[in-house]
Image (cartoon, rainbow, N blue to C red; front, side):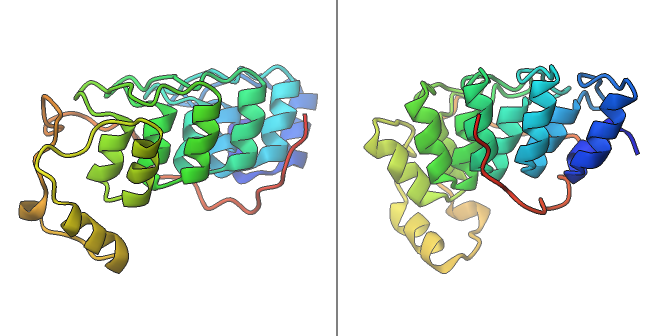
Length: 215
């Protein structure tokens, strides 16, 4: 095990041991992920705080351009997100492949509390990715209706050009998948087909715990 794997597992004791032995807290693995990115992705707030205190770069990005904040927003880890923003994490950082932002990642997963937090710290609600889709549009695309409606209530744009809201509302209530033919046309200028994904590996194991961190 190395310091990055220890961070991913939330093993604070092991992380401290590696640091005491001279491990670089900003070392990156083959995917460009640093220990703090791994720890944030897993929701290990205590490890994130320790690494930041030891000089970890909170805005370091992996090969896909994803930062620790982006990974935490993707998973909805509020304590980690609070802490990283307090340490200067960029709320409008962008992924390399599609131009994804933390707000878009949270919207796609329906993390409304995360959306509230990001917007309160200056996230651009109508920033668009390389396919001209906003966080609101991407929430609709992933059938995260409540998240999309929350963003609209705050001035978010990106509703489908041909509204099929009855279809989406039904899916949101029933939790059933829809067929491709039932999807509306999106306002994006180009489709995603043929583009690589910003994800390179499967997500880490579910976090053992999320404890609130005070600066």
